[in-house]
Image (cartoon, rainbow, N blue to C red; front, top):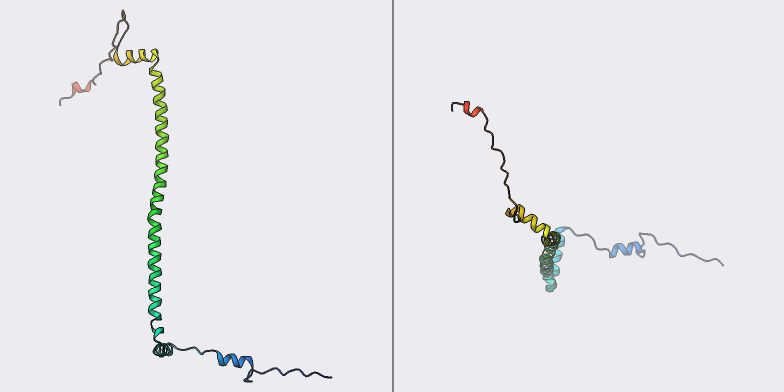
Length: 153
């Protein structure tokens, strides 16, 4: 028994898949034809005429929504970044104040000792113990240059 294979359809055969695809494929329209086609379609179906306006309205609403979202995020975001910078500055100031406090605490402890009190009394207030004499040593007088006496001016 011999089996007969079906014949392969040719592209010119109207029953072939290529021919059917060509028949179904829409042809490309030029710009003028596209505009006319759209107008004819809008005349038949008026709800599609508003489709372009609806698209423009939707795009405008999306843009406005994005702008509002950016503004809503940007303002607090900028405040957050500014506060982060301020925190760094405040930490630097805090370190300075703590070192100043430590220095002043050391000074306070030193002023409580009798030796420091005596040193300040002698150097800043010229105080002495009873039966002591205080002497003030004056610096030598400033020398004036000799050429001032020789100038006739």
